[in-house]
Length: 386
Image (tube, rainbow, N blue to C red; front, side, top):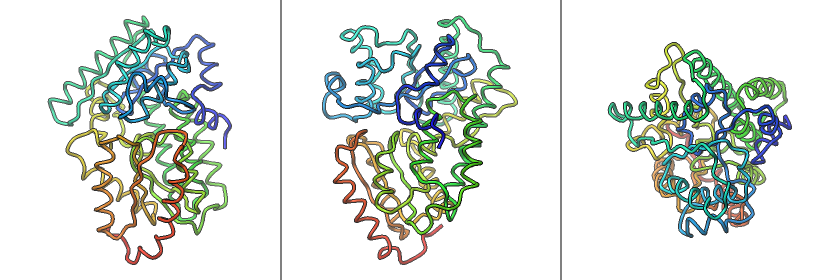
């Protein structure tokens, strides 16, 4: 695997970002796949998805958030307080969920105790929870304000031509990542789930101008490989944030291979295209608002279940692992519904609750995952319904 991918996937900072900054270019961090990265890219800047990886403590996060909250935003705040995100020129906060919404106020409060950790550009992007006519109009206005804020703060102009080029660039990324999904779902797949997630995660921390050619090279290399994972139990991984390799490594160490996913940071983030012919805030808003595969979007359970079924069929999965970070009410609640529906179809499924990050509960998860994988041959007596 390309070492550029490995470094970008495994570390908060990477050599490409350092070189980008050395050229005087800007990096804008954000917290959610509903942020329209095309706007940032069209301004000549690099979008960067914030992660709390490599956190060895949440002492700073605990101070501002308290104990009974998802550990993902706490880990992000921890890294911010330690100065790990000081390379950022700006940040965009989103009310993805209530825990992530509070990252906005907690980061600003922490800046009073840890001066200098707040980037110079700070924007709160409101994203509706419903995809209807009036919310689409409102979201397009939010994106227009976001665009103007970038232009005014950095003294740049986001032209229609640059926006069209950025849209084409990001649509190319989505096409290539869908191709990766097809490769990992092959009957005798040449790629492990860890490798596939490594490639996907790298795209959140690299400029797409560099990432796309490297991704194309990786796809060519994978297609030329002999099959490495034939005969293993094929798993779809669903649920909340998976932005490191630890959970997938546990699953695959037990003799399975993750051939599909619907996790945050994973395959669901590159569903849908932005029309390239007439770029407007409304067409951009439509793509991102109708990106309904996160449970933060109300009224689209059936769409999310349909996505799981579609990926199960394409990748011919043997079982589904549904995980959520502790105190993630959105994914935790919906995973219960998914599990019941999958089992009614005869598909082995299990729910796991875990902490974010460095797998403090690895032993418990390994035992449950191992027992689940052992149960699959006995439980799966019928072909799942389409």
